[in-house]
Image (cartoon, rainbow, N blue to C red; front, side, top):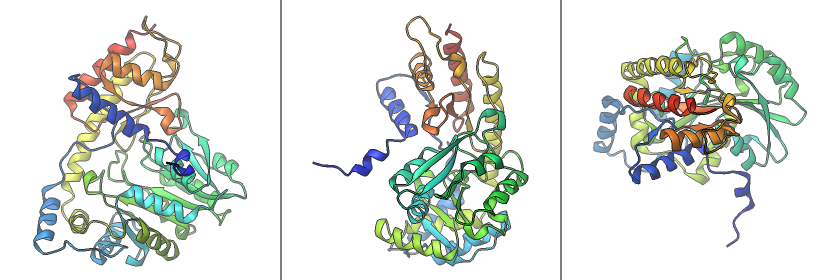
Length: 396
């Protein structure tokens, strides 16, 4: 069988690979603490589940409109106005089977072969894969821990060429937890105003998991709003990962293009999940806020614990539920059995010596780091950080 060459442009996400390896080792009886996946360990709030049950009882079990139920798209518009001060109408909204499909729709509709997409690194692993699938060219702009992993206006403008068509970023950021302020976004907007051919994809899936205050969307700037694609969903803020529901807010032309593309892939997304999503957006938000409070407590513990490990360099994430320590101080060290030369070596060492799974930063375009998810119980985090410290302290 001859498989399509486009498969050579992508690889299995490292996050999924490490989670799979963790499960395999657990089936062998090993006591593995998995800090690889970005999945809240909370149950979906009951009122959302109740709405899904009611939807089934009411007969919402048929095919759905490709763009999503009108009442859900109206609810999304209400949320965008309430939380972000953004004015959209249902014709600007496309509901998809997860925010990942929303991203795929947008990238595939915007990138032609040879087009360039600027991606600040560290970045979520799927951004570059989607650009590659579109036969575009990812242009990576390294952003280090000294700038809290954020791109500045000068670096952005230096990366722009006559082939640049797209800019993709997230705030709060996966994997770093960095959150852009309104001032920082305004500085980027001043650059985009000079380049009208560039569309901005703003991944805001971690919007509610924000420890720094009000979430700021780049779509608030009217001068470029028509070129911004806001991507969001329900998996992180509402603990609805398995429900597979995401959406975009974009100009009418792009929304229609995404609807056309999606009609040939998945058509309309799950009817029951959509009705539950209305309850999520318009119902009681206190369960989400309680979840964020728990994440904040875990973050403070994990960052302090990592900072107390000699050789670990760490920033203080203001959003999401990840720590992204620089572990390059351990490159070239050994525990008597092996020498660690890369972040992948460190990740595998922590797995086999400490029975803790993390994800190496190469997958996110940052070869000196590893990503540690604190979307698990405090008991797990206390034990995991003890194991990490024990393993790293053995290195000489």
